[in-house]
Image 1 (cartoon, one colour):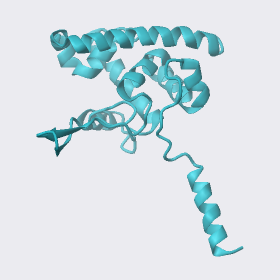
Image 2 (tube, one colour):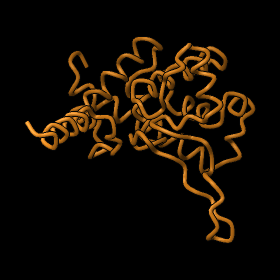
Image 3 (spheres, rainbow, N blue to C red):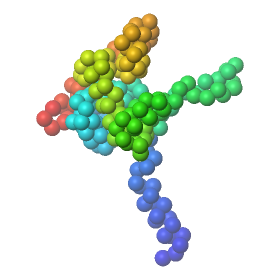
Image 4 (cartoon, rainbow, N blue to C red):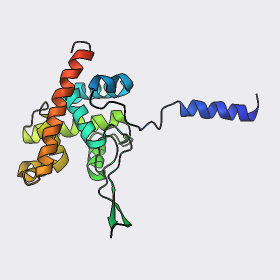
Length: 195
């Protein structure tokens, strides 16, 4: 076998390992379609639900709002004078859009120093960890997608202080997350064994 053929086979094998598929699934309004296209997403979210008690539909609604299920999502660039790049709006990255500092807190607290924000299992585990903390510290039900999202977006102190109330746009997004979670929950009852 020639070197070129061996190199081509190796390259095809490595490309098939799935290391870089960060595109969004199609039809993001249908939870059953999402999990049919990406069974690994469902496995990750179910593992998080078992470990942290955060329902799959709450995780899905948060992932939709944060990254549209895109593994390498980043915040937009800021520009001075409309043309001079000034860096990104924040350090949020990956499926969960976790900030550098919060991600570092998670990795240290959970002793998961190899965890990556562009890995769906790590990202959903992070969300479960964060939402479990919001339940413990703020008393937010793990099924309350709207309040969990607001605490996730504003941080627990911001949520406790009610900073989101002065941001009508954020309140509206929180309501959308709650509505999407309810829709996803209903849809999942039709396509998951045992509802």
